[in-house]
Image (cartoon, rainbow, N blue to C red; front, side):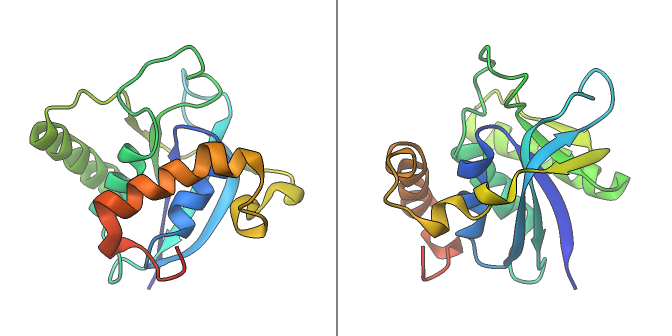
Length: 163
């Protein structure tokens, strides 16, 4: 059985690479997600298809929070909305509870919000699997490698062997 959830926070090339590195993730579609007003404009994000028996929603949310500026309300939030996009009310309640628990456990004040998924536009296919196709690109080395390194330090057990 598989489930889907969306994540936005930074460049979708980076976000795609982060979730592709996790065990239990079957597919990552990069593009742009819109929610309800006032968040109905499209923002860079990914839709993650995962096996809940292999990776928990809490693991996915934790990976998301540590690999983008989840505590910073910077000027690029229109393009890079910090969000967890849910597909049903139960998933939304679960994500909100996890986010609140992680905030309490860490003392962090997250700008990340749980929003309902309303629409998705896929990015241009030439950008799909951006990191996997050529991790030696300067963008990958500058922006994606540090995120994956942090993920290895903090959540190594959740990562695939190829990461």
